[in-house]
Amino acid sequence: IDADDGSSAVVDRTSSPGTIGVGGTFLTTVVPGLRVRLRAAGFDPGADVLLAFHSAPVDLGSTRADGKGAIDVVVSVPVGACPGPHEVVAIGTGPAGSAHEVRVPVVVQVPTGRVWLSGSYPDGLRLRVDARAREEEIRGRVVIGRGRDRITLSPTAFVRIDGYLIVQAAASPRHGPDLVATVIVTPDSEQVAVTVTDARSREVLDRPSDRLHGWKLRS
Image 1: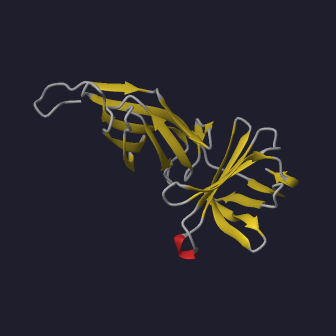
Image 2: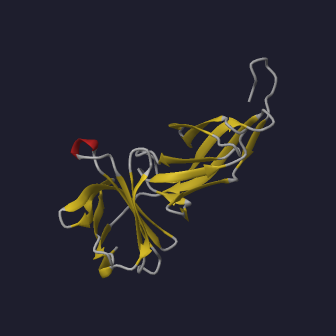
Image 3: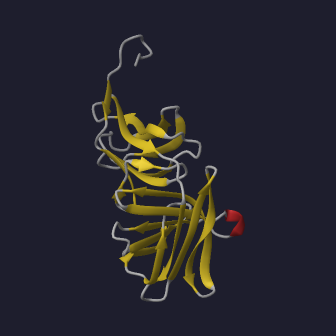
């Protein structure tokens, strides 16, 4: 990178320490529209960090490094991301004052097929997921709750990786609170975790992995 005075600026580039994941599950494969948690380190404490999705750069916003020079932020894979290798990039300033860049490689795949599951937790909380990919569009619905006290969301993404099944769904602000639900099914298909967050990524509902009664899954 050339500095303003014509000299050459030093940029610290690294593919670590940076990870992306969903619900504690680290991912190397993602799908368009998936909300992931990006974690990276090595920045100057308090530094502003710009976020982008490459190869064709897409702005993912910005965040600020904490007192230890780390970031922990939720970003969305661009809806128009093409299948193939990409990078989630975080650019800021390192402790020595030089530019610091973290690149996390990911592979984008297009969701295919259909996911259908239903069941209830021991306390009666019911979960039903119907998500199907059709012509690069995700359709269906996700229902979480008890009786009339429930929320209905539209699926936005689903991905299968290392045996895990991850489904995300969102509620439009026009039809109620701006919520995002994440459903994670473990490789043995017996444990299901559900998290619902608001527009600021604050948890509204957090159900750790548990067995569901009347469990049915087709994927």
